[in-house]
Amino acid sequence: MNLPNKLTLLRVILIPFFLLFMYIDFPFHYAVALVIFAAASITDALDGKIARKRGLVTNFGKFLDPLADKVLVIAALTVFVDLNDVNMGAIPLIIITAREFMVSGLRLLAADSGVVVAAGIWGKLKTAFTMVAIVAILFWLSLCGDFSLSLSDSLVKAVDNVVIPILIWISTILTVVSAAVYLKGYWHLIDSDK
Image (cartoon, rainbow, N blue to C red; front, side, top):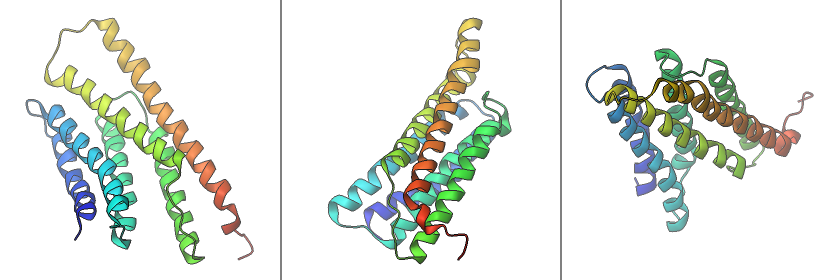
């Protein structure tokens, strides 16, 4: 197994550990979850670059890399909704999850037609922004939950009720835009008569 595939596999392996540290309440558990999520996000940035630069692109990597990204992001957003630690609600999670199913289905149709659906700039932007937003949210949860800093109520309310929802909704909007771009580019593969 080559290095990019090992990095992708590491990202998959880190997901249950991220979930474990989010759910088990012990000192600095948010900080540990933050480090794990950040490490997983870094592997996402590295594996593709290394694979392309060294000519190590494989079918295994093409399959697992986008799947690992999707599971990592959806796992984090699901935990946020489930633990009720983040003011986001389920609607962004549903939209983001639906987009991932749609793009995966579109890729299957394209593969059946011999077409490869490469990640476009909007998809990469969506993934990068969402991962950065999740890291920022985990950092905030760690500051408030792990370190119990004496922050003013107005600052806590501003971040919880304004900043975090804005980050989540920007991610959601980028998700919708990237879905629309994929649909427009590959609409010819969707034929209701076939």
